[in-house]
Length: 160
Image (cartoon, rainbow, N blue to C red; front, side, top):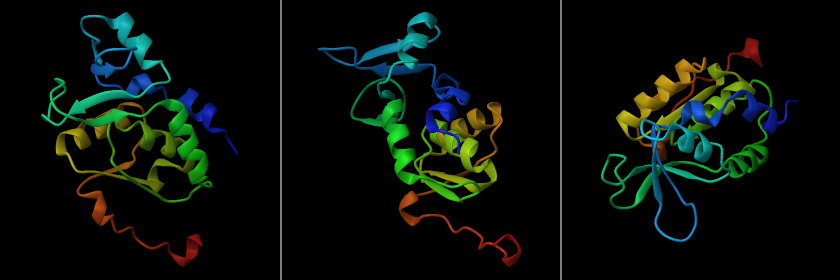
């Protein structure tokens, strides 16, 4: 079985990081980092083992209100995936697509055809789908309320 650290090495977080993020670099407010104005700093913070805020409740990445979407810190993603412990070809339903990174990691492990990710925000879902496709993963991205889950077709007896 492939370790999650190896999978993370194959699915770079930066490929799923929006051009504008906010990062906690110490005492004080979150710092806005824009790839267009400081690509070197953007690459540096993208590689940190820290959460990156990608969206606020204002519906845009402009930093007003509460954070509503983020890229989780890599060590926490690894811990979550280790706890999930999916086997090859398991089907996985992810609630909250965000940037698409976790769906890509799961796709690398269990196969993109076995990953469905549900995102309530149509624009976040579209961006996640675009990033997944650009990275070579065809996980199913659904716009909807994850509280309702997503019906998955039953396995055929031939595949059991």
